Amino acid sequence: MPKNPRDDKPLDPTDLTLVRLLEQDGRMSNAMLAREVGIAESTCLVRVRSLRERGVVRGIHADIDPVAVGRPVEAMIAVRFGGHRRSHFEQFTQEVPELPGVIGAYHVSGAIDYFVHVATESADALRDFVLDHLTNRPGVLHAETALIFESLRGRGTLTRDAIDPSRPSA
Image (cartoon, rainbow, N blue to C red; front, side, top):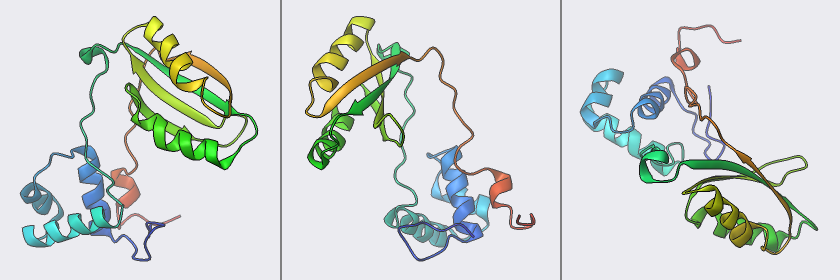
């Protein structure tokens, strides 16, 4: 049974079903969630609150189309640090996700230290973002930009097959 690594309490099939439903439609009402799972609304409310408090459900958000809000140029920027001082990483981790246009920042293994996903108004704005907010940071050795031509959305963390309790485990 999957567990949240931050919590000793394992996720049971009801929790996993709630997570899957919320992942598919974060705006689903408590009444609808309860009906889909087959539990009382009060129980559903308590379980969803517990999932949030335990960090399993980290948030519910709107998926905004960058083009629709005037930011048609998306890019993934690979950032490499020199020296690997903890203070440089900590500052980067705190500040970069808060910059305008940053969709996500990912600390990764390998030759690259971070990938930063951004959406900007134009190619010029993208260039300025890289120069003003990334390459001039302490410790940053190199930034390489790759334009995103198409963005495909995955099915999510959980699928129906992944949580079907009647399905034999591998």
